[in-house]
Length: 366
Image 1 (cartoon, one colour):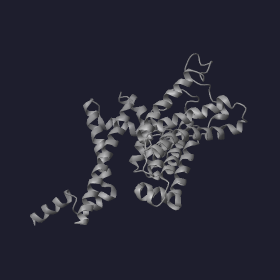
Image 2 (cartoon, rainbow, N blue to C red):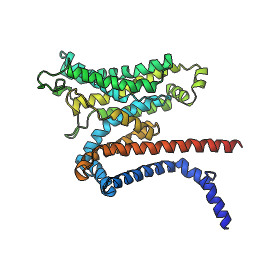
Image 3 (cartoon, helix red, strand yellow):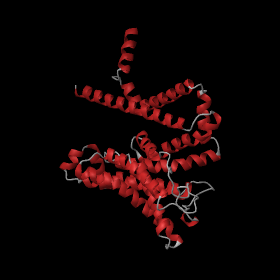
Image 4 (cartoon, helix red, strand yellow):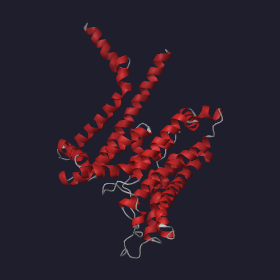
């Protein structure tokens, strides 16, 4: 009897038992990865002589424990969701867009150009023009790595990442140079956005039009992927690019379209930041939303619908980070460390999953 129990436990540990297989495919490894990230954060806080329970509780209460905290959480959620979409849409075609940060800044630049150069527009046309210009700017910033990947085979990861720095430097060039407001007393700001150029907001908060636009795009993209020939083609390209080439799919065109669409989504986040949050173009408009959005995409396993709750949770963590500085005397960057630990645990989880998949395949063949 004891020998049988030991043998069964050994099979479970090695991943050769059906019970382990069921638990694993149900997401047990993801739960373990999240628990590992919390454990590492707990040890880190203990190492810097902070009470881990009180610190984590402060983050949760700050982000989710009050109406004000929830409003700030949803406000932070909006650019995170849009930047996550910027990575999720190309990911459906097997592409990696790490350029959300740069595409956000290009959207902010393009939206500000409407205020500076198209002053003759009727007031009711300003917001639609800003939305279209912002999406165009972000799409161009996504088009560049798309066409380089499609026609020259250049790695889109490197191109989109390097373009982030170009976009941030371009914002600095403009606000320190030709777009600097002469009435800003020397500060590197553009002119303020007039009231007719501010996106609609809700409940006296900074929750703006970008959120319903992002959710609508998620719904539309889900329908396209599931019920259209175009979506089926994208799924084929992700699953097997070689097969997609054999059946005549133009992979180059799909790469350009997907990366351009992703850039347009991140650009909406930039529009929201300059129109609602900052009220003008300035340097430092994003604390890294583009990079965090990429993280959210992979935490959601590239499923656009899963981006919504994960963006809300991450937005709550960042909202709670403000309270963390007062309650625990820790910098808001503590949350960045926590998010990095989650991503590390997730990567380990993905590695284990792939190893298990290979093991199951070999076992099935044998």
